[in-house]
Image (cartoon, helix red, strand yellow):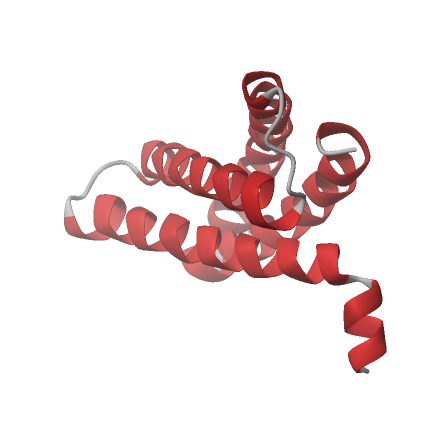
Length: 128
């Protein structure tokens, strides 16, 4: 098992960083939508942007260890994340509004799907 984790270190670190960024994302979503009563779609966009920024910083510095051409890499990363956010938000709204699935379960499902797609692109394009 330990060998498997070592072999796939970048993926597991990406997941760990994504988890930390998602916790930040969820906390901001909760604060904005449930405490401040800001529209949940707008709250989602704001919370996702905060998660993207944290994720990029941690992945570029600690996971992929690529700090050259940081502006270009951030543009790629942010583009991937924005596309992922659109995909994730579409899934989130569909699950929440159409299927009546609890908001935070809908958010979790959408984050997992978008996260897998983003990892594959970022590993093979952004941080190659």
